[in-house]
Amino acid sequence: MNPVGSRSAQAQGLGLLAALLLCTTACTNEITATLKIDDKSFVPTSCRAGQLNGFAGVDLIDDAGQTLRLVQSPTNEPNAILLGDKAVEFGACGSFSVERQTSSVNDITNVMGEAKLECEAEGRKVSGTVTFKNCH
Image 1: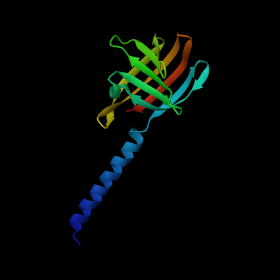
Image 2: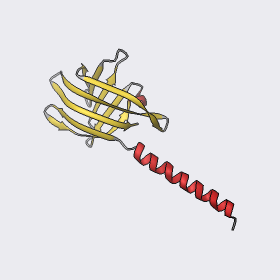
Image 3: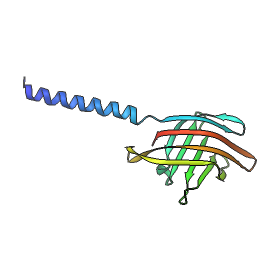
Image 4: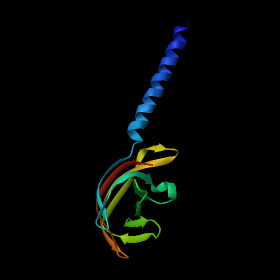
């Protein structure tokens, strides 16, 4: 048995374990929300960075697949869009901040941020607050 080769294998194993632990903590979405859509609770269980679809912001998705898109405009105005059979663009409403994190998954940089929304358009409403982290 080669003790040097054994140490190298141990070091590789520890490096792999460290990478796995980092990924499980840095790659898991963290979302806290008290949002309502049309006076019904909207509980996002996952999120995606807007970079995936070419915008600065985040998509918040619930278990039913309903998506609330929060977009940071080039002039730093927050825009909310409810995606579905018919997209509803609420425009600028409330406050929204998003920033890039240092971690990434599949070349998509994770984002984190928060929003406080109070929006109405086309007979639809979105209200409440959300914080998110590790959205990729």
